[in-house]
Length: 113
Length: 112
Image 1 (cartoon, each protein chain N blue to C red):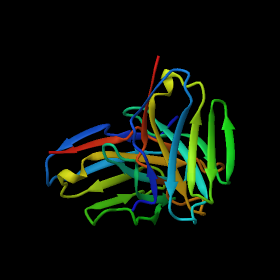
Image 2 (spheres, rainbow over the protein chains, first blue to last red):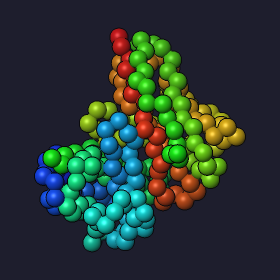
Image 3 (cartoon, rainbow over the protein chains, first blue to last red):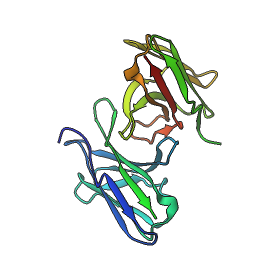
Image 4 (cartoon, each protein chain N blue to C red):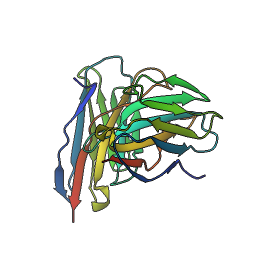
């Protein structure tokens, strides 16, 4: 596609439920990043992939969060046993190899009731 | 203490004004400096990118980096209502694949 696509754009769930957020990067971009943005804050790094492998997952807040990218393209961020504090916009970005520029999607807005 | 600090504003200016946005950072290991613009309910988009001290100009936008003071700035000349957005500074260490550290963003409104 022309840009980074994220689905769903909005997700409302109840505390304790499981959530999956999907990111479809720009075709050909091998590096993919997940960030989380809380209201009034800048994006906070979660994890990035180079190809299929997680090159740096040090930003994942705890073991309820997990991300995969099995074929080196689409990535899924998985959140188990959601908590109200997980409410935020989850942003995905893919990286243009030549310039290193990150292209962000519009985000998935997660609300945990 | 966060790696990069940014005054959240909000900042409200009339059309045509010069806008100055600033960030400070604490670790001299940071080598790459960026400014992103984020419209409401959209993802951030890259405005300016620099890796050296000094000024970099692109149209109405000028990015300034002072590594000795660990201070970065974005100037917007002849500001327009379409510039109304949140401006995020971001910094990165040496690796081109590394994570970005973002400031919390400054919300700017340019009124006609």
